[in-house]
Every structure is written in structure tokens, then in C-alpha cells.
Amino acid sequence: MTVSSAPGKVYLFGEHAVVYGEPAVPCAIERRATVEVVPREDDHVRVRADDLSLNGFTVEYEGRTGDDPDVDVPRPLVEAAMGYIDAAVRQARAAAEAPAAGFDITVRSEIPLGGGLGSSAAVVVAGIDAATRALGEPLEKRELADRAYRAEFEVQDGQASRADTFCSTMGGAVRVEGDDCRTIEAPNLPFVIGFDGGAGETGELVSGVRELRERYDFAAETLATIGDVVRNGEALLSEAIPETDPSPELLADLGDLMDFNHGLLSALGVSARSLDEMVWAAREAGAHGAKLTGAGGGGCIVALDRTPESRTALEFTPGCQRAFRAELATEGVRVE
Ligand code: MEV
Image (cartoon, rainbow, N blue to C red; front, side):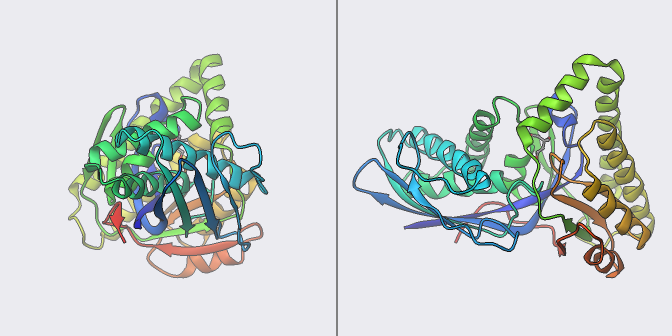
């Protein structure tokens, strides 16, 4: 049996625009998906996934991935998760040149599904890592990140950047611009996360932005402006002392950029009332800045705040199901 885990992430800046070659800065957070893999004698894949959501319910699923007509898929979110696991299995088989390898797979995750915290990337990264190790063919991290990206790209109909999968593989703060992916130094950013209990549909949201971009020059310019916000944010991070508590001035400046980034994402139609309400609750409680994270449409916001006020305010915000602090996860994928 092999067990690997990989972290979720928040976008400090740059989601959606990263799909069009602008830079983005996602940061891994200490919320992990863990995948356990046991090779089988036959070529079947059986998946068991418990507690795939922070949504207050536990998902019990047992079935075979692939074209098995007997698979009983109880919930749309679980179906989506199974699509990612299928794609991860295909990548692991290809990497190990074992096209008929079968597995019993158990997935556990502390990351809400589809909530903008990189749940699918974490499951794919941990899944490919555990499955290739089970086949005796562990992958070097860059290749693992590349295969995980290909899995997401396939499931999201060719609309995925390398940001989520690279961040989940490497951990820490990363910078992604097209195919250029690198880790960057970052101070200890005090992330506060609010979760509305829902999920956005990444493929649909990315398609919606694509249509706007094709229709209106100002939508294309909005995406380019997000790129400018990211470059400003990167410059601020590069002046900070890594792995120390950031100064109040730095937090204020990063927060301003997060607010700006949220406004631009709202203009592109990917926010939601629940996300806007959480963003405003955090700001009014003194957070330095707040924005949605990930594809949007529902799910999570991320705020910067060292004090407990914005988390408490989020907990009392109608529409916020859960609020929590998240540490930067310096470690990416790891063997458990
Ligand atoms: C989704 O977590 C982030 C998006 O930028 C899509 C992607 O980068 O693949 C919306």
C-alpha cells in the first residue's frame, strides 16, 4: 500500500487571467487530500471516498471508474471528483507504462470540493504520486506536476492552467505564467478563509470568461489588468523577508491589491452574492484585503488578517458556512 497527500491552495492573485498567459500567485495551505493506493491483481479500479467535503456530510462511494455501467454515482460533486481520479489513474498507468494496472483507491480530503481551494488538483497530485509509487515508478516532482496538469486539462475540456497542480505538488508560494512555473519566497501570510458551503463549476466559469473576452475588448483588458495586479503583488512579495511575519505596511499593500483583484473578477462575472458578502464582512472587520479564490461562482474567499476579528465576522455572516485560518503549507506532495 502507498499513501500520498497533497495540499490545497488559495490564489493570492491571478486566477482566470492565468488561463490566458498572465502570471498568477497561488499559495499552498495546510489542508490536504490523502490518497491510499493498493494494487489489484486485475485491471479494475475501485474508489472509496469518504468525507470529500467540509459541507457537513460524509460521502460514501464505492464503484469502479471507467466505462462501468454499474457505477452508481450518488452526487454530482462526487461524480466530478471521480472524473479527476479517473484521469489521475490514466496518467499513472501511462507514466509507469502499465496500461492494465488495477487499484483499490481510498481518498480522504480536508478540502471542500469545488470550493476554490484546489481540491481536484490535490486529489490528482496525491493520486498520481501514490499510484506511480505503488507501481514502483515514483515520479520526479516536475513530471508529477506536469502529469497532474494534463489530468486536469483533460477533465476541464482543455481549459486549465498549470497553477493549481504545480502549487499542490511543490507547496509554498508559486508563480505560474504559461508553462513557466517556479516556487517563490513568501512571508508568513495570515490567511483567513470563508466558505459558503457551495461550489462553482470551474469549466462553466472559465468558459463564461472566455466568451466575455472574445466578445469585449474591455474584458480582455480586464484580464490583462489582473496580470498587472499580480506583477505588483509579486514585487511586494520579493521585497519581504521570507518566512517572517510581514509588516503591517506590506499587509496593507497586499490587501489593497487583493481588493482590486476581487473587483476585476467581479467585473468578469465570476463572483457571487455569498462571496461578495463574505469579502465585505472580512474587510469591515479589519482584514487588510479580501477576494474570492479559485474559479468563483461560490465556494471560498481568502482574506489577510492577523487578528481574530475577520474570522469571527465571517462566522456570523449569513451565507458563510465555515471560517478558518490557514497556514501556508511549505511542503507540497508527500509520502504519508
Ligand atoms: C481554478 O482553480 C483556477 C482557474 O484560473 C482555472 C485554472 O487556472 O485552471 C479559474
